[in-house]
Image 1: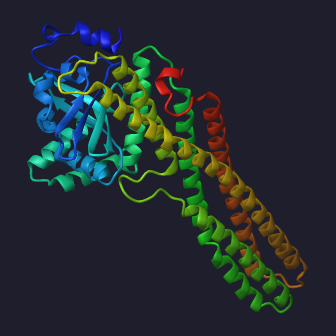
Image 2: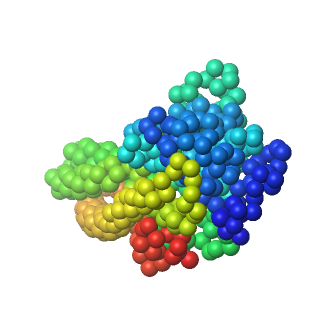
Length: 426
């Protein structure tokens, strides 16, 4: 049964006296407000679920549907993002006119003159987690927690749940809801989105491994300093060992500088700042969702009091095009980043070969000394351990790069163009 069929069949008599308002998994609805949050337009699905007439909603504040179970901190975080120009995804519990509630996952987009909110029914596994977190926030706010502190508390909780920022959470949530929505309609998962999700996981693993290698190299400079000190005390081979220590130090510094540059590619700071893979995935999901709401609205009955069907269809289409246009270069940049990282790994491997050459020269020179130096042998042993640690870290980095590249190739093969989502993804 399609969302429109459901809408036609579920009139007022079908609504329960208490609990959740009827809301099918394949339904999608939207509302548009001005900059003050005054409702300017909507579709018929919104009217039925919220139990309002068109005349009730035109010109009404959007908070007319706010549920008292919603923490103020969530809206603080939402408004903080959209006022800065970021699209925001959030779980929201609303209240209908007759007192029933309905949960939505909302994609809120800043547009000229106001905001557009597109909503779907949450079907993924994150909603129970969200309900528990919102309940805890609500209790804390009742005890005096301010909206700003409530928002900060929510972000801290998301971090403990494995989401380093609200941007990371909203991307993961939107992906899961898009895939769960397809499953509820007996459709297979969107393989293009799955591939991008795998790529994101591989890139996050890569950043972790680069950070680990950076830590290894930061502590390696002490080895060359100690080698020079030992060389200065040698009765013979002092100059040769000292030169080897100098060469090893130069090679280490070059490698450390390169890795430091890669480590600087860490995720941007801020709750609304997404790293490249999150941004690309969020934009593609949003393009898919907007594509579907455009199709549904074009096929919906045109007669809604106070709503210009043609004008709203044009606004929806413009937002869909905007997301598609932003998704394409974001996806291309992501693929380019994966290719650059592979080249970086190859460069680092060549640098490690250079380190190995210097290390072998040091071992050879040490063996030629007539009087062995215990201190030098200890340092050489530590250099051997360092080489093994570096090789191990590079293997992990290379594996993550290969995973990212493979996932991106899968996306290129299986995914439709951004903006052609639910109509063509199978």
